[in-house]
Length: 304
Image (cartoon, rainbow, N blue to C red; front, top):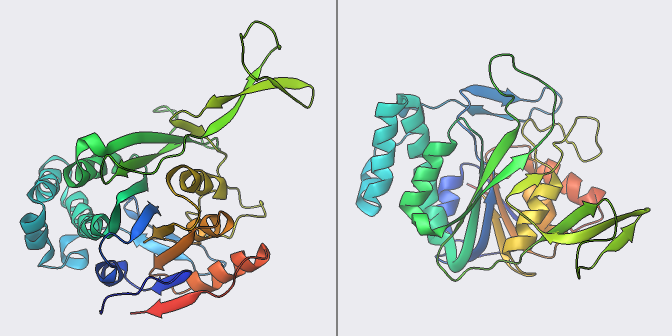
């Protein structure tokens, strides 16, 4: 594929690797993405055909030249992949190779002041963090943000698993970051020193610096925001990321856009965006979501 010209509101339809390779170097301000998690199962929604396969093997999912290229460009990345084969499984190492070849291109496309937020859960989080440490350097790991959600389902054999992790890395020491603040509710208005207490529905709160545990409700099927996409994440989650690590007019990239949540968040906040996804229903869902909020519908589709 020839080099891409960065154009706002572009959806790249198909395998994201050729599109990532076509992006100009240091052209993207922020990558916020929710890739497959290596859950060893398939995800689908009967209503709209949305879904994807989340099972990995060397024969089906890895091109023969990928390990050689990774080893040549980033030997530490290949060392993590090899270690995963020994410590976990062939499936985990195949998944890391599949993801690692794409992370090489993501890092290349990031500007020197850019950042990556990679959304993952406990199935592969420890291994993916090692990949990112090898690629970006451990000093550029800014946060391991815990997204805490309260949903049904309680285990009798372990503590209920009710969080995902957002791995936040910068490309360098020079990166965009806007501290976020949230309401911290108080029992009464006295005894807190010289802080700005505001009244809200009869109670009091202060605006406190946001920490690395985010309590944002998960989507439920009966909410207006829900699309039926099997792994859709809340809009509030990605709006927070975009506010914190980009400026109006910046380019936001999501190589695994799924239901289009990152694009919608970027559009609402005045950022430019490029989305990528292999699902053939991504365009229709994205345009529908933008139209429902009266936002731009002029999405450019770029096929392979």
